[in-house]
Length: 213
Image (cartoon, rainbow, N blue to C red; front, side, top):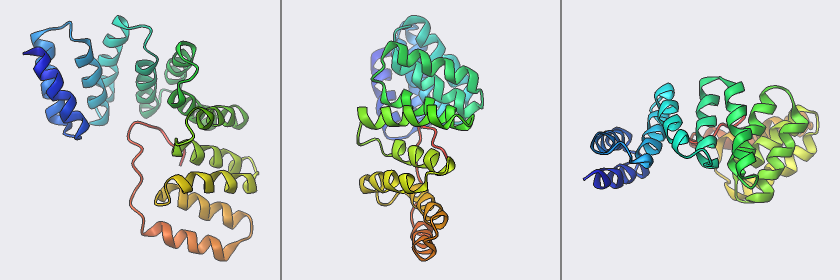
């Protein structure tokens, strides 16, 4: 019965039925507290529901039992970013990379922290690592373009951003950033066109990630 609730919780989570997922994970844990994956799943779902502290608590239980999980440290680190606790987030993401330096998501999210702290060179290295590890990771292109733009390298920013937009031409955040970059380059007419296109694109959805704006 516990396994059934875990499997159904996973299915609800994938369908973004978070309330039902949490209910199934909770039922699973009540039936069998040894179902570690239920703690992981519930921690993920609670965080997405905005119950960040509760999500961190569940992921902490999972990490106590699986201290070698690079993925779990990454996910808890993301939730610390959502909470605004960048020191704890940095510790988790650094640990995630110590466990697995090929963790593309951890590189990207640690880069976000460095960028928010104005450490653009360090941020860029992590975003570049993400792209090298996973060339389809569109958000890393956006983030790398952002730090290039903020550090005054707008032409390089445009090149990187266009590579990211080739992966997802309908990304509103990246199209808005492109408008800003083009404006900084004095290409006003192109900037206006990009801004106009961005107005009609859907809001971005980087649910498990922390993009630079």
